[in-house]
Image (cartoon, rainbow, N blue to C red; front, side):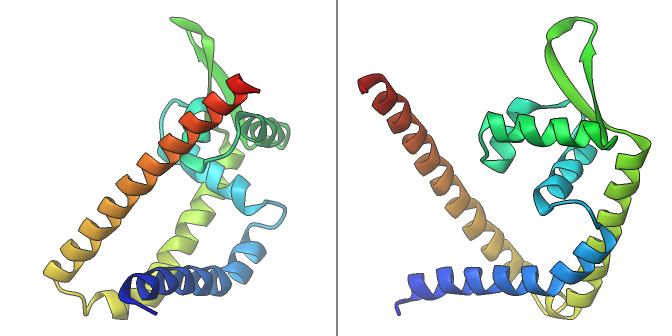
Amino acid sequence: MNKEELVIAGFRDLFNKLVWLNKSKMEDSLKGYKSSEVHCIEYIGRNEDSNGTKLVESFYMTSGAISKMTKKLIKKGIIESYQKPDNKKEIYFRLTPQGKAIYEIHEELHKEFQERDKAVFEQVTEEQFDSMLSFVEKYSRHLDAEIKKLGADIKSESRDS
């Protein structure tokens, strides 16, 4: 494997290990909620005036899937929808008290996981962090551009059909 392949394989391996390590504790603490629902709750809790468009862009899911998930969370009493007085067209979401409780449980779990992994991050220098962050940002911008290209191709393909 070349270095590029090793980096990608390393990211994938790290991600899979994190998911595996965190999964059972997350599932035990957040019974009855799918991972996507918990991340939707997290997004709404962190971002004021969350709406369907912002959720679609953040999760790379279809608007239909986001609509289905938000309706389910509304039905469970986790989020509520609202409109602004000056904009009756757009629908926004916010957490209910029950949703805030789920959000807090999730945040506490993240703090616990961060504490578990602290020993590794304490050994990383500022320069190493800066280098890693620079790479992640650069790669993310590249992937955003590729996603945008794919979206444009999908639109033109649907017109050609």
